[in-house]
Amino acid sequence: MSAHQTPPSATYESAFLKACRREPVPHTPVWFMRQAGRSLPEYRKVREGIPMLESCARPELVAEITLQPVRRHGVDAAIYYSDIVVPLKAIGIDLDIKPGVGPVVERPIRTRADLAQLRDLTPEDVSYVTEAIGLLTRELGPTPLIGFAGAPFTLASYLVEGGPSRTYENAKSMMYGDPELWADLLDRLAEITAAFLKVQIEAGASAVQLFDSWAGALAPADYRRSVLPASAKVFEAVEGYGVPRIHFGVGTGELLQLMGEAGADVVGVDWRVPLDEAARRVGPGKALQGNLDPTVLFASTEAVEAKTREVLDSAEALEGHVFNLGHGVMPSTDPDALTRLVEYVHTQTAR
Image 1 (cartoon, helix red, strand yellow):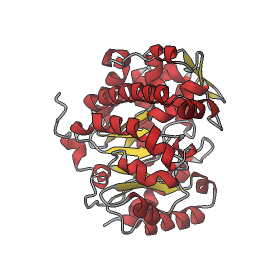
Image 2 (cartoon, rainbow, N blue to C red):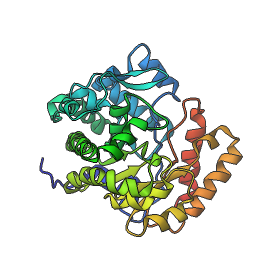
Image 3 (cartoon, rainbow, N blue to C red):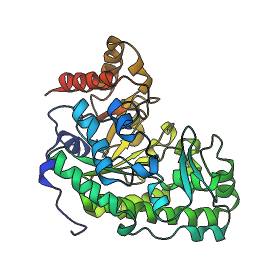
């Protein structure tokens, strides 16, 4: 398949891809970050006793978990079930996802010599991804599949810190104290991330999302100098495929313009900035995704609808809008609340 493939016609006319391309839509499309996972009893059942990273390497299981929210909620897109550390594990980084903690790296990257751990990612390293996406695209038919990857900054933070962090002191001390090593680390991660996204697109993903979950820890000047070039490299690497590219981070209100500049077609917005203000910050030529506060789903149906109405109203003048939460679905969310939310957005925005 060439890098300049024509988009698969089955999904091309979907509401989700049209919104990403800023074209008129029959209704505002909806999907949720972390829509597959712990909020669903059927997920907990199929995952029972299977470690997280192992579950990401079993094609049939990946396909089943990815499909669960599409069947249950009637969302407008599926998102490939995986984890941001999957490509790192695939190239041999010694890491594990510890329940209740998150990814833990055995030998954190702290010196130039440690960069040797980061070899190129080949399609053979993640053959299970190609297989799972093949299964999924056959099942999904006209429903688009979103591929995803962690952005270089967030991956670098895990690798340098050795696990989750609230302060990013090791990552930031490398960024400020050894900018050359930092730039080389992010550049290597950009290549690995781009290769991982290419595998997903070539296997049949209709769009991709780059998660820079931790970018909100950065000041705009630091983001522009030390992070944007690597994220831009990832987006540029997959531009030729013609699939929409989504960019999302948490707490990134101050970075929205820069995240758009990095090359995304769609900028994800968390719940802290109203969408009309986000559109002003991002500037013209981009669709926006978001941005209901995930905790609203614990309130009454009336409250959820009122807050959803606020989001839809602030999205009124957007060039393109994909409805989503401002972050992932929380594990204790009632799945029925999500199903009702999809239905509400669809009926309220039917054109």
